[in-house]
Image (cartoon, rainbow, N blue to C red; front, side, top):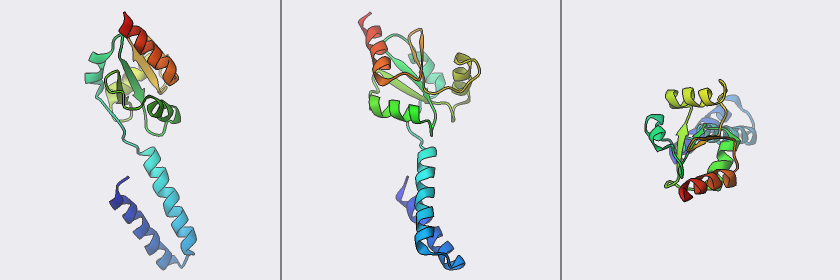
Length: 140
């Protein structure tokens, strides 16, 4: 979240406090919770369009379908780190083709994270499971 957004949120909180006469602690607390919620659910994160990522699917490389607000996606992202050589992230909320593909792979469900490694489809894998599958593909 940018500093400008944070300052704007607090300015709105102060104006609301002055207009309504509400306790400043309540308004400030509400503003902090609101900013935190927006920052969590609106997380932009990494995204490669499916049109590009589909060409990277193969042994030794993982393509991860993810969406903002998904705690399992967040956990996987934190555990894997910035392994851009072996992992590509595709946000299904901003890419209609990716959303269509993840639903095709999961019988109509928007199940994330869904990971493609070679011909394998991993649904909500641990970082260890995903990276082991990638390493196995690199050995072949």
